[in-house]
Length: 371
Image (tube, rainbow, N blue to C red; front, side, top):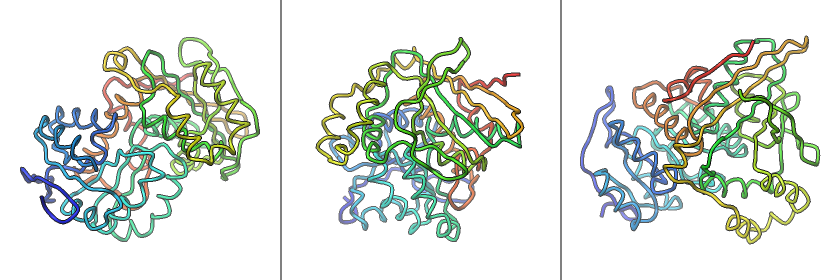
C-alpha cells in the first residue's frame, strides 16, 4: 500500500525517448468490458500499461494474470489521483459514462503534466474538454478524446473527404455494423445517459436540436442501399473541429426494435431526466458480445461531402467490429504515437493531430473512394 487513498504495486520502469516513466501509460477503467480488451491487446503488442480502477477485487487479479503494475483509487480522491499520475506520460481513460468521469481525470492530467486520452463518444464531453484547450496548451498537455471507434474512423473519413472536396459545406457520416456482436455495456449506458440532452445536428456551425420524429435515408455501404437512421454521434462536434465543415449529420443502421425504442423516447424524453428511469432502461437493453461474435462482425463507415455548387465526394471505410475490436486497435495506435513523443498540446481530435490516414494503421481497415 502506497500513499493514503491509493493502492499500488510497482514492478518496473521504462523509458520512451527521453521520458522516464513507470511502465508505459495508465489505463483507467481497465477491468471494464472494453478496458479489459485494451489491456490484453496492449500486452500482446509489447506495451506495459498500468492497470487502474476503483475495485481492487477486479484490478488485482487482472494485473496478476497479465503481470502488470496496478493502481487502485477513486476519481473523487484528488490526492490519490494525483499520486497515481506521478511520472505517467499518458492516461487512457476508459471508465464511462464519461460525462460523469472526465472532469477529475482531465484536471489531474493538467496538474501532473500527463497527456489525456479517452474513448468517449459523448458530444457534451467533447465540448467540455475543448474548454481546457488554453490551459492544456500552456501545460504542454495534449487532450485527445475519442480515440476509439467513436470517433477515429468517422473523424479520419471526414478529414479525408474534406481533402477530396476542399469546398465542402455539408458532410454526412454513417456506419453499419454487420454481424452478431452487440454494443459494449458501457456504450449502452452512455447512450441512455445522453437521452436528456436530446438529438443534435450541426447547422451553419452551431449545434441545434433535430426536428422531432425519426429521420431516415438510404445509404449504400458497399452491398446495396440500406435504411439508416439519423442519430447524435460524436462527429457533430469533432468533425467540425477537424474539418471546419459547418453542416454535419450522423446516421447508423439500427435494429428495428432499437428504432422503435427511439420513437418512444422522443415522446418520453422528459422522464429520462430522472436517474431511476435511465437505470431501468439500462437493464432492459441487451449489450455485450463474445470474442467469437466480434470475429464474425464487420463495420462499414460511409461519408459524403457536398459543396454549394452541388459537387459531391463519397468514401467508405471497412473494418472489424467497432465497439471493442476497432476501439482497442485505434486507442492503442494513438497511445503508441503519444509514447513516441508525437503530441500536440491543447485540445485535439484524432484526425486533426494524426491525419486522415491514421485509421489505416488499424489492422484490417481499408478505405475506398467512390467515383
